[in-house]
Length: 110
Image (cartoon, rainbow, N blue to C red; front, side):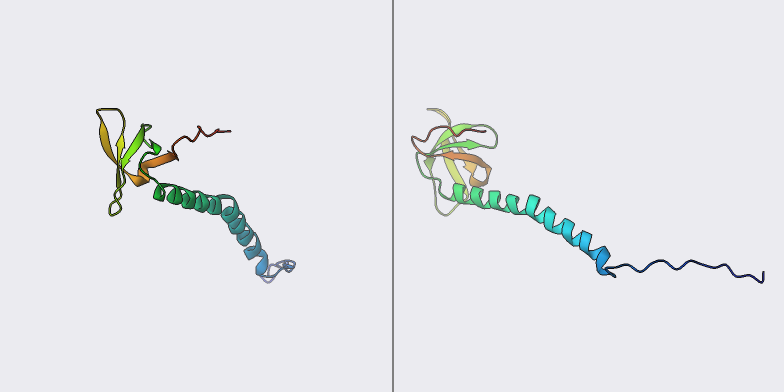
């Protein structure tokens, strides 16, 4: 009752409160460099690719269809793709996975 417990005083953090913030900041930078930035670059390349679609290009849709572009209206997000001689479909530009220009060979997926 008369004796109070003695608490050991911890050693001071050499970095102060910055020592807790530094690893968190480092993780955010690494996350940005490895995940966010490459994804933004891929999205930019995809947007550029679908904006350059022209009549006669061969396209691959996200559903796996391969066809030839027959109409590319300027004022809409849809294009017309010919899948066979009798079948033409309208697809959204955003669903295009790959655009192959006339005469371009198949890309290597290495």
